[in-house]
Each structure stands twice: as C-alpha cells, then as structure tokens.
Length: 379
Image 1 (cartoon, rainbow, N blue to C red):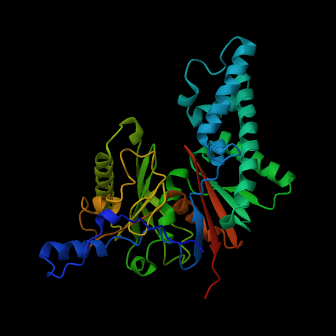
Image 2 (cartoon, one colour; image 1 turned 120 degrees about the horizontal axis):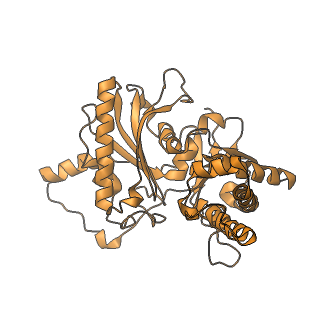
C-alpha cells in the first residue's frame, strides 16, 4: 500500500519547549489545525496506489513519459513540417513556429486537408505509437498491476488532433492484445483538476454547503473555480460541476513564487464575491492541486521544477502562504489542502469507474502526469 510522502528537515528540529505557549503560538496552532490533511492516499471509496512515477527510458537519459507528452507531439509535428517543406519547397504551416500554433488552428488545418493535414496525421501516428508503447510500460509497475482502464487527461485531448491520436493509440493497444481500455477525460481539461476535489473534501463538511473552491496549478496556467457538489441530489457527486472559473496564463507574465500565490489569492477572492452575489454557500475549504510529490506536512518533495521559484524547500508551505492571504469563508477558518494535480484530475472520473476495480490516469501536458487507483468495496 502506498504511503504518504514525508519531508524531514533535521535543521528545523528542536528540543521541546516547556514554556507556556504564547498567544502568537496558540494562533499558529489554530491556523495549522485548518491546514491539511495533504496528499491523502486512503479515501472512503478509493485507494490512491501511486502517482508521479518517473520511469527511466532504456538509455537512462530521460523518462519514458516524455515520449508521450504534449511537448513530444509538437517536436514530432515540427519534424514532419520540415520534411513536407523540403518536399514541396513551401512551408505548409506558414511562418508561425510550431510551438505557437494553437490546438484550434491545428484542428482547422486538419479539416482543410492538404500538406499541413498530412503532416498533422503523420505526427498523430507517431504520437499514437509512442503512447501505445508507454502504457504497457506503466502496466508493468507494481502500483499499476491489474489496471483495466487508463483515462487520458490534460489539454492535449481537448482537441480533435489529440482525440484522434489517442483513439489511434487505443486501437494499437487492442491490436497488440494489451488488456487495457484507453479513454479520455469526460470533463473539460480546465475543469477536471477542480472537480476532483469534491472527492477529497470531507463529506461531513460538504453536507452544509453548496460548493467548494478549488485551484489547479500548472507550469503554464493556473485555474481556479467554484465547484458545485450536488451532493444531496447525487451522493456519488457524479453531477459535480464547475459553475464559475478563472484562468491565468502565468507563464507569459513570469511571476515570482510569491506573486503567483498572491495572484491565486486574488482570483479566489473574486470567486467568493461571485458566489455571494449568486447565493452559493461556499464551504470553508480550498483544494489546491499542483505538480510534484505532496508530503503530509504540506511541503513538496519534488516534481515542481516547472513552477516559478523554489517550491520544494522544506521551509515552504503553499497552504500556509495561501491561507494567510485569504479572508474567512462562511465565517469560519478555512481548511486548505494540497494534492498532486494528476491525482485530482483522475478523481474527477471516480463516479464513472465503478465498473472496474483498478484504473489509472495519464495527463498529457508539458510532461506526462500519472496516477493509479483501486476502488474500495462498500462497507
């Protein structure tokens, strides 16, 4: 069974202090009581078996997941673009660099046909071959043994180009008799990492409120949203939905770590104002999904290198920094919890995976996020 990650820092250890706690210390203790638990692995209806597996490729120079990332697809497309340009003497994509051609534009070019569409289809096939190779390698890992379904999330599948590549990979896996089903995330890529938090928030807390606030931090974008649970209509929260969200493409602004947290706090305050105007009762709970290994004390042990500044310091607590910038929610102290972004995005599928025992998620982004799960039998 997977264990929570623990971050130890001997430099911070001190002998017990027998002096009475000061008022400031008591306030700090009360504050800490509202933070966490972080990185929970055992939930009432599902066990998170593992996440953020970093499997080395054959040469040991990189990770196999990198071959099936959004970045990898762009490199494949760029290589085919060069080949078609050399053959025709004219660039089928025009003057814009491949990395700057958006998903919508690629979908348009695919539909229009011609050399650009041929290059896209060739890149789709290359990507499908890589994904069909990566999935069986994950299936050999202990935390993925017996996985029956793999759900592909992330922004790549939010386009016809991405959907087509994933469908082709599913066909390749079936032809190779790999006993796994490949599906795409049913929620929008900007919302899966928010909706998943309804399955991590304490059910007893949700009973008295309509919604929670959720945050999904990535290396390029930050998404914040109000998630309606619909708990009383559907106890499995299969109808949970994002009713208001905001998105910040922070990579273009190159903020510092503190500026990014300040910006997130500002986004959340605006969402709270919207909820109040609409009469939405928001629970004093904020779920924050981010890359990396989330320790039970709220620190990040690794995998957050794409975020600005040092997020992996043992002295940095994102939950603390965010908590201190926020107002009271519903008149009470706010519980701020952290978990891995792939884990949370995968949990948005929980109500729809009850027909299988073991399942997993791959999130296609700058890298390839991953998480695996085992559904627990009802008590």
